[in-house]
Length: 299
Image (cartoon, rainbow, N blue to C red; front, side, top):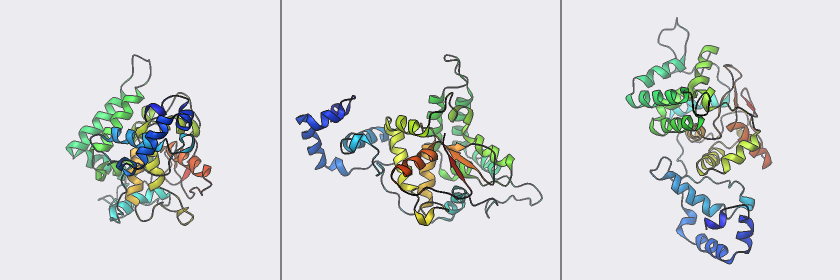
């Protein structure tokens, strides 16, 4: 089946080649058809490649399948999920209880507190130091500011190996000042991980992403877990499971679809690239897009 999906003539192979049609028919009735992958599993990439081998043969023109290749996430109503999810709605400009500074006389900076908490955890400190060093190292071979490929890999390792209680607080800390918001923006070392020499449009990012099994899978998972409905158009998506949406957003970091805050605004912030492509893909399906205090822009 993999041989049938290689090259520019894959559509013709699926339509006209009897061996390809027979292979697809066998897969449709096999346990592999309904299989899903575990997030962070040892052979995650191999599992995802198997999933798309089957499902790319079932979608018209190899287009994006609406379903996620990952196992469904059980709904979580944990209070931390609500606190962290508040930022994704763009509605919060005051730090919620639990993020308040101990000394009321000092300016509250939850992002600085999140960094301090990370440094007190050996795993978080080690992984964070590793990706910062990698993303800040000049790529002398290519004469570039860094190796974005290596930077993305280091970021994925950080997010895969560090518990969300530390990593998500760094990514989603709510801010009341530009200094705090700038620290939040710098979390993923955007000069390396986020910026490109040239700025392709959203559909180009999406096209490149779909050619990579990991990126395609994580984008599909994000679209499922952060789907916007008419009821959630101005609030957090996925009201029943904020944590699943936050985790899916975070797992886009380190891929072609790496999202980030584009400036240091704390009251009317903008997220682009990954979120922008999701919006473009959503419009393509004639579904509503999100709005509110947050702004989603094209890369």
